[in-house]
Image (cartoon, rainbow, N blue to C red; front, side, top):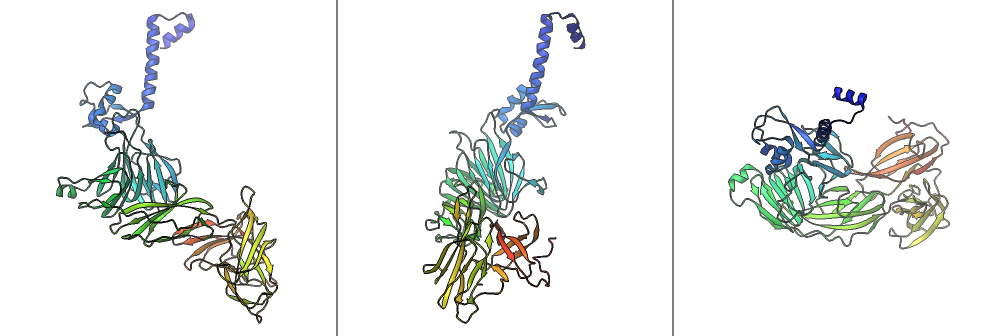
Length: 556
């Protein structure tokens, strides 16, 4: 090549036809090599390799061996030279993490955490994935099939064969070691073999196009089908040898079964969908999402999901309840869908019922200062509460009953979070307060009222305290805890402290004089909700000679 290049550059002659042909061949060879490398993967031949088993392994079909033969110009599909390198047609072998919530990890070969999985990640064939408590992963395949991996599950992407080079039907195989998957499979062409499989230690589910759920835990597995059909077959050698004939079960829509290492159970009808029509459409309490529905006959437990979409692909809460009721920490304001399905005595999940609802918990209500819960006060006492960051007004009500059907005072546009009672008759009352503030668009919004606080008006009681010693709120449940952050600035960049509260109150008597910002998040069992809007505490002291508590200790 060097001589040819020198000759052409010095003489500037038109190359001969033979030279033109050789240059074209060289260019074509370079282009073909680049194209092959871009569209193939390399395989080093070992003893026992042939084009048939390589086609089965890489292309999902032994009959596709001619594709490998054509690229590599091999005469005999059985005679391969160990140590030589073959180019194998590249087939799309990734699946997209279309939604990730919570603790979702990619595991190594020893099933130890390797790295967190993030939204948009491309996961390859062989990937091992785990989801933690109240975590969720949606996987989207090339044909828009969706596999939803629920909390506390471990899966492996055993096979993802799809692409234009694939001569047979695509293959998508998930191995479910433990936990739950909910799969929506895009229908395949008629007469095509099942192209989506979920394998468990006890059974294999193969489908062409349907919606089905699989659960496996230790020595048991369940499957239920809500759309289409699923071909179930035993996985364990013991089950196959025990029932050599007719070991498979074809599940139609509305059927499910349980399986063990001894084989498949009988197909049976699924439980009907629970009735959710009486559930609230709007939830305004910032602490909890609380739902209760009629129990299903033969319903032993209920699985739940709360998602942004009706197809349950973007899920923020999921788990199992042993009663027809549910209480979870709240979520950010917006539209959501609640999915509930009953499980029978064998833990086979039934049809799912979906209820749309709206969360409207902001702007957050103020914390209460005076009067305290169940306190006796005079007839002309002052009612006071904390300010809320960005609030423009406050709405305070006093009523004779906890349902506020007999409202005595309705102060709807207070510039500060305080109200001076004129003359209240003796007796029992309840009071509550709400915040008025602009939202992200600048539109004024009236937030939900705080939970009612009880009080008693007694002529012999003091009218007002000398100073507030605590800020408090009324909790909906006694087992709720709270994560509290106290900061010197509204951006919470100068934290004074952060701690879990076991009671719904803040002791502010030991805080040094000054302005503080407080954020609270609800904790219920292993779930933690979002932080509420920041409340503002104005603390004044005459005597600052006191012992420090956790509030004014530096954050560790």
